[in-house]
Length: 99
Image 1 (tube, helix red, strand yellow):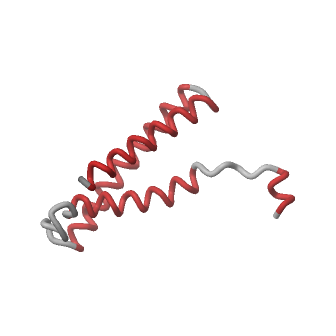
Image 2 (image 1 turned 60 degrees about the horizontal axis):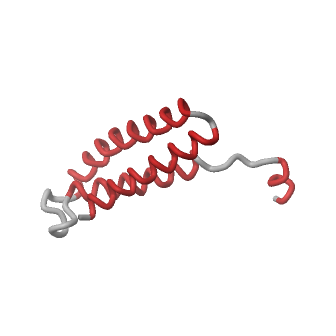
């Protein structure tokens, strides 16, 4: 159940980014951003699965929090840090004056 929620969060995020980039930059930029999200998800899940294999047993901590769910949780935290920096609005001249 936790894994399904994490997949849904990723799907929702990709949909939001697709819509935002489509409105701001065009359709090609929207598809490129979704492709970036998909590639980072696939590669990141592979890397966090390798890390999770060293940290915990396949059964995990509970019925709903096995090793795959743990690796997805690690991935989600890592991606959230990266995406907050990557999709941050650029500072304008008026924002720099306030600092």
